[in-house]
Every structure is written in C-alpha cells, then in structure tokens.
Length: 468
Image 1 (cartoon, rainbow, N blue to C red):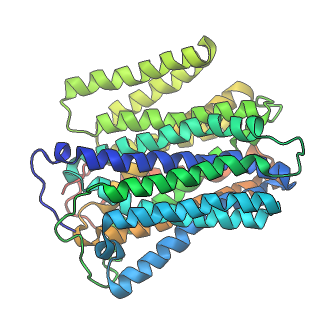
Image 2: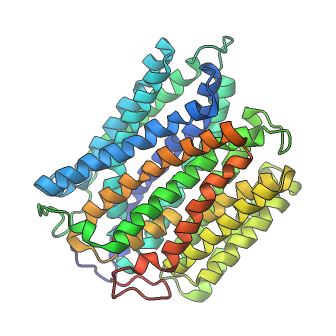
C-alpha cells in the first residue's frame, strides 16, 4: 500500500479522521462493558473465576478466528480490504457488531450463558474487521513519522469510551435495569439493544460519508509477504502480551477491589475505580498524541503539562482531594515517563512497560490502598502500548500493511487467553496472587521496545525512531 503525502496531509484528512475516531470511541465503550458483564454474569449463572473469564475468551477469541480467516483469504486471493475498500470494510464490521449486541436480548430471555458467549463472539467478529480496517487507515492518513501520534489520538477517544463505560454500564446493569429476581439476566436487554441501534446508525453515517482512497490500496497481491518481516512477527507477540495483560487486569479488578485486604468494595462501587484504570489509558493516549506529534518542543511541553493538571482538577471535582492526590502521583510519574521517552515510540514503550512491570510487582508485595492504586495506575502506562507497538510493527511494510494489520489484530487473541490463565490462577492461588500472570507480558513488551522493534530492519534508529 503506497501513497504520496503532501505537507498538509494531516489537515486535509481531518474530517475522515474525525469520523473514524468515532468508531474508536464506540468499540472502546463496548469492549469495556465486558468488565461489567463478567461479575454480572458470574452472579446470574453462579460461575467461578475461570468460567466467568470465558466472556473475554469468546469476545477476543473472535479476533483470532476472524483475523485468521482474513489472513488466509489474503494469502489465497489478495487483500480483502484492497478489494472492497476501507469504507465497506468498516460498514460490514459495524453491521456484524449490531447483530452481536442485538443477540443479547434472546440470550437474556433464554437465560443461557452459551448464548451470551455466542453473541459476544459475533460482536468480536465485527470488531475484528473494524480493527483491521481502521487502525492502518488512521496510520496512513498523513506521514508515517507522525502515525503513532494519530493512532494515539484515536485511541485516546477509544479510551474515553472505556473510561465512561464502567460508570454508565455499572449503573445501568447493577442499578437502573436490575431485576428483583437475581437469577435472570434482564438488566442487559435494553442497553445492548441501544448499542445495536447505534452501530446501525454509524454504518449509515459511514455509508454516506466520503472516505479517501490511496494509490495501491486495492492491491490483489497474493502470498504471505507480511510474515517475512521479523519486527512484525515480534510485534504480533507484543500485541498478544499487551492486550492480554490489559484486559486481564481490567477483567478481574472488580473482584480484586472486593477483597477485604484490598478495599472491600461492592461491585457497583468498584466499577467507579475501574473507570480510573481505563481513564488512565485515555489521559496517557492524549499525552502520547502530543508527545509523538510534530508539534514544536516548547509548545509540546506546555500542552503535555496541562493535560494531567486538567485531569487532576476533574478528579477533585468528581471525587475528592484524597483520591486526586493519590492518583496525582501516577499522573506525575507518567508525565516523567513521556519526557524520559524523548518522544520516540520504541523508547517510550520500553519505559512504560518497565514501569507497569514494577507496579505489578509492588502490588503483589503489598495490600490495602498501595496494592489497589498501583493496579489502577497501570492504566496510565498501558496507554501508548497498542499504538506504539502497532505502528512500530507495520513501519516500512508498504503493500504488506493490510495483511500485517490482520496478523496484529489476530494477536488480540491474547485478550482471550491471558484472562483465562489469570482466572485459573485466581481460583487456585487467590485473586491477589493471580497478578503474577500479566507480569511476564510487560517484560516481553519492554524487550520489544528495546530491541524487538528493530529486528531485521536496517532503517530503524537504535533510539526508537521510526523511519519511513
């Protein structure tokens, strides 16, 4: 896939970028709703931690199946996105997502856990196509040098969805639509029907919009060109580890915060703190969008300083001074991490992955408020991982970009496997001790930001820069 970038490329594509960013928000919101579904369905069907984690297995397993199907199709008959175009790929993904969310209604009527898992699988298939089409599309809406910045900005709105989902979803499912009969699943009927309608409306809006095409985007080259690039293969593993660790932590957090030795919170109260975890991704991704952009250094530093200050003030307004002061420590630490990363994608990835590993280790060795907030604070350092890994992994691939994108999306299956492993660890050794599972994932991501991203690439700077 090739295109010619004009000096004002980023500004010329502002409207299509804004439209696609709306997709990022919506799939972030729905994905994070799984964190609410897990404790809810766990109660409805009397599941243990391992069984409840099959919510994530079904949802993220669909990413693997869908991406594998896409990859096989691209090997045999050429890139499907190249044939149907980005817009049609996004529309099909939205309609599949609408079907998946609509199926929650009959699943609730039948009070069937397997039916819920099937609905989540179809929803995941829709999101798979959206990921394959939208991520590289954002990356090519301008120069390759600022691709990480654009993807971080889009992911920032994705994280806005994940931030408000625990609060809104927790209120709707645990409070507003809750039934007097704790054995049924009626609370999810109306919310997921609304989500289905939103997806249909978004598909109509995308159909009416004019999204730009790029020279060579309809290539029908066959073969497994993307697999020849070692930095892409290592990037697949990094995506597997990142998504698995991020989802696993978010999925078990309500149970973790409910432990007496941690905070002893009820699910509805704990869901508020889950929003801090996902909110950290939003704050960090907006910081990453500025840090990795082409903005002049003095202006960049000023804007980056204002973002955590604004977040700090909002937390005081929504919560209280004590919460803001505690979270403010992690805001300051993340800002320091960006400056130490020197606006270089790989270097910043290394710093943030090592920080996440250190916080997990601290949480394992402590209890109470320290363990609680170190786990919550990891969200800030997860923030730039997807965007930086993705853009580092597809850098310099040209016509192999879409195929590589399908491989990277396939690696999202980490979100299906690692949560189940942590669920099994929680059943066997306790929820607190189970956080040993994602620790190894962050150590691998740190290696990718240190050496893995440059494997087989002669044009990758040892400082972590990405050359076109």
